[in-house]
Amino acid sequence: MSEIRSFDQLLAAVEGVDGWMSPDQAERLYRAAQGAREGDTIVEIGSFRGRSTVILAGAARAGVNVIAIDPHAGNDRGPQEFEGYVQEASEDNQVFNANLAAAGVADKVRHVRAFSDAAHSDVQGEISVLYIDGAHRYRPARTDIRDWGARVQSGGTMLIHDSFSSLGVTGAILRELAFGTRFRYVGRARSMTEYRADLDGSLGSRAANTGKQLLQLPWFVKNLLVKVMISAKLGGLMKKVTGRDPEWPY
Image (cartoon, rainbow, N blue to C red; front, side, top):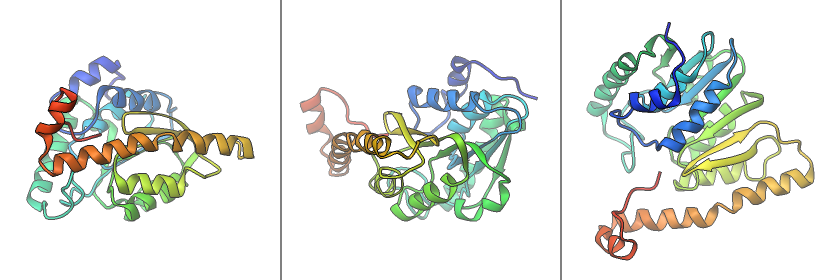
């Protein structure tokens, strides 16, 4: 059985693993997984090649169930990669398994190779930590947040990648969480938001919770503009203005 390792050790283990996860985002995953107790369940939706999976599994103590849900079907694979990546998906699945083995966490992870909306029966009981990095279009993102979020235990943690960065994910957050009564907005690391299922439901708490999320919208608008500029091949102009090479927001 794999042992719990330090955050620095796990960050080094995923250094060469493809994926979109900055160190501060990885740290939020690490801390959330560390809080899971024996018998708890951690669910990840959208694993790609295992970068975040290694962090979650490596931080989880013995007896915690770590379930990675990803169909590796060639859709919603990465930025602007929505359909038609079947051959790459097969490779993603092989690399995913190899990366987990190389990091020494393969024995701690159960991979459910299915679309998230069809995987509920593969997960029993409530969820202690839920990490959503699946399809970024509005409808599937909303479905993941609504249906899987409903399974997070009271006081549990939900983390969502590409929040206030992806148009679809942000729309889903505004619809399901910004004015909600259950999930409290804790904060974010770049585009990874953290929520806790402990909002008391009072009018004052709900108003404050809504306000904190709406305050992220200017950053969201900036991210959309960056994406438009990169897509329009205006990265050179952005570099002249900012002095930095443009980077796809995540």
